[in-house]
Image 1 (cartoon, helix red, strand yellow):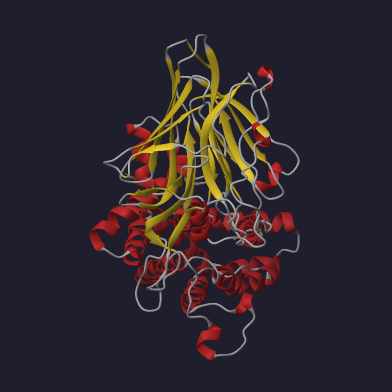
Image 2 (tube, rainbow, N blue to C red; image 1 turned 180 degrees about the vertical axis):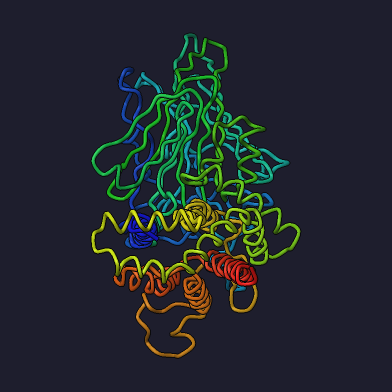
Length: 558
């Protein structure tokens, strides 16, 4: 293998190291709680700044309240669906208490459900709010003090809830809430104008939250997100330290994205809205919209309608909403990454195999075998070339000893390749193909909630988490975190070592030393990745070893 090819191969491996090291060690900063509701109104209309409306329903506690304590301060209407439980607050209407019925916080048998939305005054408030703004400051509007009249006992897929409030000036505000079997709410707001003159109001909605201060990995986007005029916008929390970001869009959606969970307001596709992403307090982030003006004639009714999603990033469900409700690019709430064209199909293949086998770990192994089968012809040619390269190593050393002039050595080396009918670049082809495949599968295992807490066999209880049977667990010794890896990463390192021994050794001693260290480096680096990815790579290495051994045996017979 000539110097250019070896340098190219080395660059690929070092690039992998750099990318994964960056992904692993880059974390978001910690953040802590505060509160500050409602969006600013359109400047062109000189409306009062709605951010000045402060929730005074309870005095600021000395310490954050639990969700139960916060809900007790502002009791409301219960929410119950096959996927959600919780309540909505009827004094100062908010959807601010939701738990996900199908997902637990940990693997413990008595683990509580994942908390999706939480009221103000808790450690990490996270809620949605809807209402109206007006240019005329004399118009009384619903606010955080408003006690709505409720029609309906419980919000379920079969029973809607209606909130009503009369402002005493001839305007009656009516909000009708419905919810489906999953995570989608419909928020239909109407205003009855019983005055003698027309009234112009602006619908608004917001989602506000204090993000969880758990350390997060930059492999998956976690922050504010939206689709504005068919363009995806992903905004990190740190991007909003100095200034807000504003957009004008017709239709689309905006919200917050976590690794597995997601909230969004889906805007009215028939009107133009002004959307803002911002930081409204020391640690409170908010995305809000102000819709097009609604002019309500005397004796008439004005209305606006939006959707609100709060739940898990179930890829098939998001695809269903995208097609059935015509929500633009709603599936991009899942961070598929650069290799979208591979990542999403890979998920569907894994999900299909899981449906047949019933175990995601075995589905990953079968997927690895199928990939090797698809790439068999290319890999076969590559391994044959590498085997020939290994056989002519003595001749390459003779040329190095014979020619000290580099130009002459390179010319004679290329002539040797031509005589032996060897393509030195062919050995790099499987690596080039494997890079996007590896990154795509890496993404799938990091983003797909279907793999979260999915068990394999033995001690692997969560394929999306690192191997828990680490050296410290086995030896009961204080092993440093970086070196404390599990059994599967060690097996992967061993298979890499065996596979490397089957490849031709670089003629340069320095490069040979670096290549010899690669299995060890990758073993410790991959030791803290999702165990599903390590299992995939281990089997892929084993299949490569079998294929290379078979080719070498066939060549020896020839």
